[in-house]
Length: 304
Image (cartoon, rainbow, N blue to C red; front, side, top):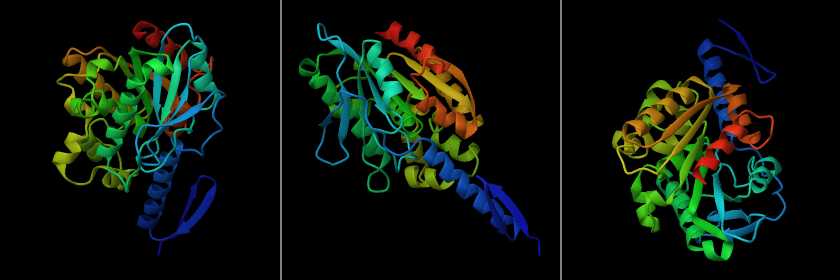
């Protein structure tokens, strides 16, 4: 009988047969991928105020007002990742990201949403739309410019902001139009076309995708931003990805579909490989020496 020694994340696993080693490798890879976008909650940057936009305990957002109180400010609304089943509005949104956007003159919000399996992905997209609608309807008292509101999300959050930015049903149900979203910034998502990702994206996230999207092809398609891009769409997209085969493939396909429909969509590769790069694009955004920061800054200036 063959005995296999697998070294994963510094831990030696002796198992037999080879299929068991592969199963363990896939499970650890899935765990790493999920945790990459869902680290422990961080202490929020100074000045945060928490608000509820619904009745569920997870329907809350953290809000930072812009520094300049003299005029209504644009806002960057961030949606966390975590494999649709974990994560928090304070994941990787600490001092670097929030403080940087505040220094650019923007307000910032970070949104929680209900999690799988207690909720469905459809509910999560509805929560993102509801948070956007709440901020927009409270723009006057929060000193926000309702015409300059951008959605940004990482990993599962990238999928959710892209879905809200392409499927008008979520905006309509929340009481606004897709044209009210000034732009969308998905950060290293890999499930913009769910059936394609399940077929081509490798085995290590299959359990997560099955839990989030089920096995019904019609439902998988309905939750695929790329398949909603015929229009209407949010007015502009900045799609960033690192060197992950599936993230690159999915990002480029989403960008191409948006442009085909006449929606401006910039797709840019950011240095960084695999799951490490996947975590870094979220954790390091806002640091002056991180390559994505000036790209996002320049794009936001064009939109705001």
